[in-house]
Length: 337
Ligand code: UDP
Image 1 (cartoon, helix red, strand yellow):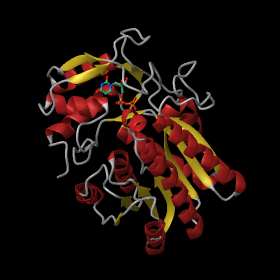
Image 2 (cartoon, helix red, strand yellow; image 1 turned 120 degrees about the horizontal axis):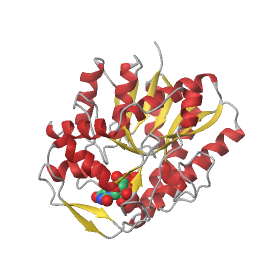
Image 3 (cartoon, protein in one colour; image 1 turned 30 degrees about the vertical axis):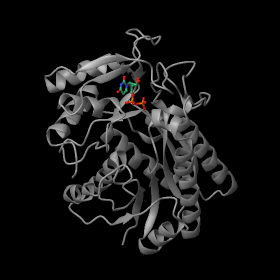
Image 4 (cartoon, rainbow, N blue to C red; image 1 turned 120 degrees about the vertical axis):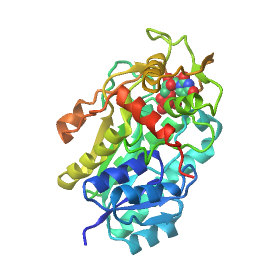
């Protein structure tokens, strides 16, 4: 029996697309999720896509007992650690929850991996660790000056993982700094299904156009960018998912710590994304100018050349595909329940 990849947060938006990408590559997954910000219904969809059973462990990544039982019950060869709290705005209001889940969750996981003799870990980090970079595109060696509580938790976990690998040469760790994942699987069977009002731009546009919310707030039109709105590097979630597989393959022959940006390598303003979405759905996006959001920065996009050089990976799906796939998912219901 070949070993499986444990995907923490595997029922979530990015985790579910990683599970689907692993299945496409003929690799087995085990999902660990507490459904805090995801739905059990995703698992049936993944099984349909994969054509094989996918074991699900319902539990919290901070729970040492759950982790120990998971490693005991399944033959796990590697872990992709996506479970965490991820809303920049919310994180400044809930520092305790963000530090507890993101940092303590990773410490407990690493402990359980050590006990189980599993040393290969891919960690979901974020370009928010950079804060506002001095120069763009931002490369992996740029200074880390996160502007939000969320970003500071990610920076801390990165440091923790480097400390681990520094003390024990058996670790094989990939720290993947995501730009802005968006879009959905083209089947529209899985996609982004935030509970409550979405925080992120693309899912909020989906639901606003579908009539579930009044208007999309444009968080600031006075940023130092050409049209005054924030610039981000939007990466299709399937490209992002495939980057994890490439990282796992790389770790197979490279112990130590690998730190990589995963982005498309170009930036779009909020208004450009709104325009692309309007083109994809053929309808106007209702919007209203709002004050800047806490923790936001003006502009960030990635230098993604290290991922290409080391993994042979690059984003292949553009902003139009992101918007078309996100809208197809919304039209199919945009939810699991
Ligand atoms: N944004 C916006 N209105 C929203 C949500 C986001 O104007 O309702 C902007 C946000 O200020 C940023 C960009 O869209 O410039 C992407 O934000 P998102 O929350 O999707 O991702 P983040 O960059 O915070 O990870």
